[in-house]
Length: 398
Image 1 (cartoon, rainbow, N blue to C red):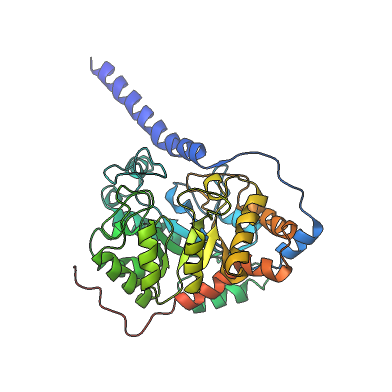
Image 2: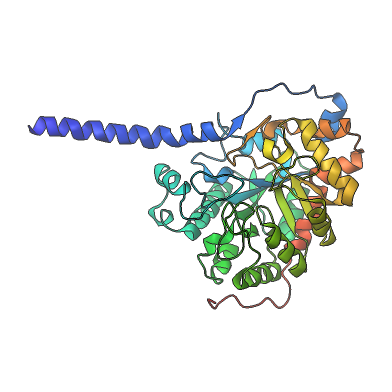
């Protein structure tokens, strides 16, 4: 009898071990895909130009997944070796902490969460199992560990001086890649404005107020009520701008976007998405919203997946970028891939020269390509990371 019980326990242990070892990777392979459709040929001109660009991507969810960021993976869209292959100078890495079951673009409740099961399956620290704040702090810890283990190949960016040092180092023989932390939805504040200080101290320098559901700060474009900023939401925006954290309107409801644009004293960004003019999906920006972002001096980051540009082709990405350029000027165009964000794309970050080629084919000049691929982002990030004086206190819980 004891042997039978022992055998059952061994089988359970082996099954559990196999689950924790294999399930997270299988989930990621299923969610972060490359569609395998043909890619256009890349010209010698595009190859040469691409090598001279300072490339910045405003949004990737790679920290969500349980794999080493320093090693080349056989799944997903991004890791350090592939960033190096794509000649990326600075990658903004988002912390995604909650995602509703049955997630869709139209209407979601915040009552359920898919990410909790992923957190447990990946054997993340127990403190992250029931705390959205701790999930973001864990993502920051993952990045800082990767930076420390990278032998200088990966650098954390939190200040304008960090950006200058990164760009200076990239003129050498072994150009490092910079990484800056962002947050996809500030529900991780867990209702406490003071937690913004903890996120800032951990290195976060950009954040969107909402993700796929309404929260206590604002309405989501994909929520149930889709309202504007709440009183604490307004406090958070003001505190972010004062601290030198860039406000991201991605996923915000129309009312939320309007409220932020009225309140903003500094450039705001739409880190990842598309434009209604080329892809009529509710999360994409209207021309009025594009003009509003531009009026703050901000950026429109164009994504690479089908709901952002209604296709996955490089030409569709360039088409959306061209619309922004023609509407408000090249200085407001940026990249916002949404790599590793449960998206299907045509190419991973190692093949970013495809965007350079598509912009050439769309008639962009070399200077316009330099601006859109990263020059604009460098300008806005350097300006936005400077704290205002004096910052408002965030020590008290409202």
